[in-house]
Amino acid sequence: MRRAAEQWLLTLHQVGAGLRTLERPSVTVPFMQSDAPFWKALVFDGIDEVDVEQVATAFGTVEIVARGSKAGAACPDCGHYSERVHGSYQRRLRDLPLGERSVVILLKVRCFVCDARACPRRTFVERFARLTCPYARFTTRLDRVLVRIGLALAGRAGARLAAQLGLGAGRMTLLRRVMALPDPQFSTPRVLGVDDFATRRGHSYATVITDGERHNPIDVLPGREAAPLAAWLRAHPGVEVICRDRAGAYAEGAALGAPDALQVADRFHILQNLGQAVEKCVAAHRDCLRTAAPPPDRAATGTLTGDSEAGLPFTVVPTGRRAERIRAHHALVHGLLSEGMGLRAIARHLGWGRHTVQRYARAARWQDMVTGRRTRSSRLDVHQPYLQRRIAETSGTITIRELREELAGRGDQVPYSSLRDWARSRLEWPDAPAPAAAGPSVRTVVGWITRHPDTLTEEETTQLKAVLDACPELDQTHELVRDFAQMLARRTGADLPDWISSARATRLPGITGFAHGLTTDLEAVIAGLTVHWSSGGTEGAVNRVKKIKRQLYGRAGFELLRKMILLQ
Image (tube, rainbow, N blue to C red; front, side, top):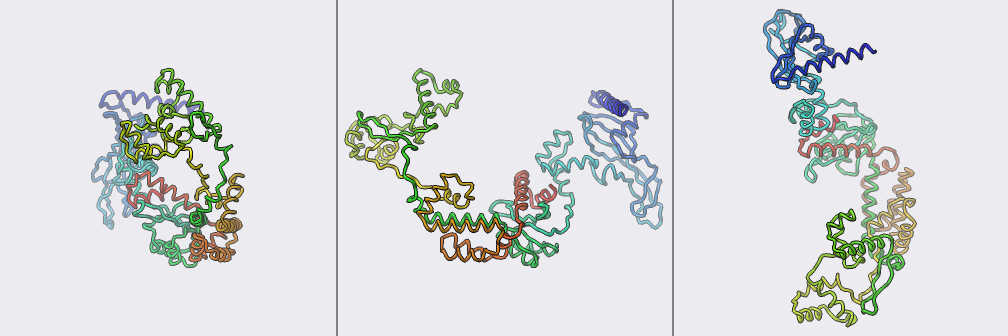
């Protein structure tokens, strides 16, 4: 083992010494016949059919002159061995870089004459099967590297990487090698997954077919209609289970192409459709959400404070850790401003962003930072103390029109709509009604109803109970969703017809339509709620397809995209 290591170090030293002699733009490496075994073992390891004649360099490129080592060759048609040379020519083959230098093999190829009288071929060329292919300009090992780069990075990105590695292959060279690869061979799977993806969103789509047991793509079809899928299934008999979404085209194609196969509707899409139905039902009863809203908790929202001597109305002061932090930051920024520091200096001193400091500086009160009021300056801000005093003096009975006339008397003509909008956000009115407690949003209630009860917090459970007590229709929806979830978890798809009857009897908006939609695909839905097969692996394959599509910048044609999907 030590002798092998010493021999390897000696080889590296000889290569480095040989390349260090290539300092001039064009130089021939001192080559002796005794060096031929070294270069052959280094460049043509395992290729016995080639001998090295000369090694040279030109402008940073190592050129290796080689020729065939055998005296003759066999005719590719009749197999007759011939040593009669008809002529020769030189092939220029690019190889993997050596010592950060490009390598070019100048291969002398001989043409032999076939002496067999029965052979229709007159002449033939000797072939080097382990080194390169006919008509190729790259060695086989370099071609394999370019294929891997093309599959991983496609055209432009692959060309950039190839340039960094010294391979010097353009984007079309990489794409041609990818397109030349044969499609992977597969046996017809027992379980099949079918789903669609957008080649161009809103315009064109394609269908990906996956092996339901191994979750790898086996074919890609143009479009998402029933005819291509049916034709594919007829050409590949033996499919027993077809996992799909609830699209009618795939159901029709599966029924036409494989009528004996079991169609399984994916559980994820069923639950997704149920969630959409629940959202329609909750949206139709959004008035119940307002009546079920809990009264505002003053201890949680803030405390009442005011300045009775100045005649200002009482306002709600926010409390809590966030409010205290904002109050401290507001006081800190305004304290530094009072000391004469600028915004940029304060930002550098506190380590904050300049815009953050600017927001605190523009807020006249720290409460404005909590309530989210706009702090954009207005030319009416100079009248705010006067107008607020007039509102306090009149106990809020003065109107916007009267305030506008007073400002006109003070020499400032203000449009009515501008003063109205500004007063709503900047002035406080004593008789303003207390803001009503906002109820939960539709999406929030849908989440409470469709999520597992164990994932809800205690507060969410309490609020959901208040919503269900205030609306019997939503209570019925909640019960139906729970029954459907238990049926899905226990895989009791045989109970689905009874659930559909109960759902249609309630006549709830959204839920009734969902139940009716299940009847149009009843057998596949029952199978989806019974067997363990699903489209989860197909959805994962679609995610990988989207990654490949974005990697190709969305400009790849269908054939190239299909090849990349199947070979990656």
